Length: 196
Image (cartoon, rainbow, N blue to C red; front, side, top):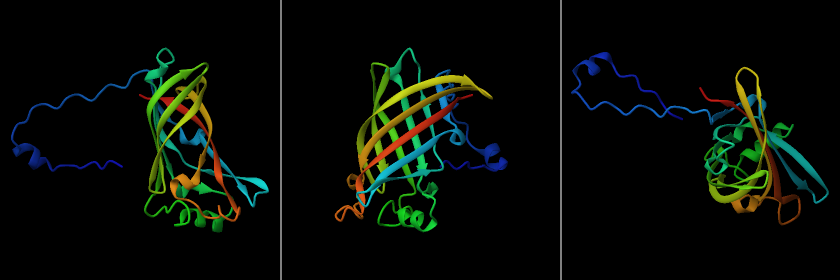
């Protein structure tokens, strides 16, 4: 989080002259901001080796740069607050936030930052660094561009479904006794608004 520091006027009046700062880069037509209210992050994991259990994260933030004419120039940055995990059970949610899983006190966010994008047919193949629970792993995920629309500004949609092993991020609770599966499927649907 960036903190805005307000300098007293007296300091500004008596400060030595400095070279003018470079103008900030203008936002282009291909810059998009994630609309957290119309985006979703859903996960599923096998419970007791019997059935799939689903949960979600209620919040997601981030930005996307996307030009359909230059898909290889796409970039993605996402942030998911761990404390927004929601499995419809407060006790279970608290367990997911503790040291057995995400350890949210020390690792309050799940983040993804793309490093490479390639076009594969109608899909984008996005490679990037996924970080959670204090560990980072490079993953490659398929991303579908789902369309554009107008609703209080121009919007664009993206969706991905991919799997990870939670043990790769140090979360091994329940794996050895098949109480909880290692493989987790994530489905992320983003609705983004054209940046202004």
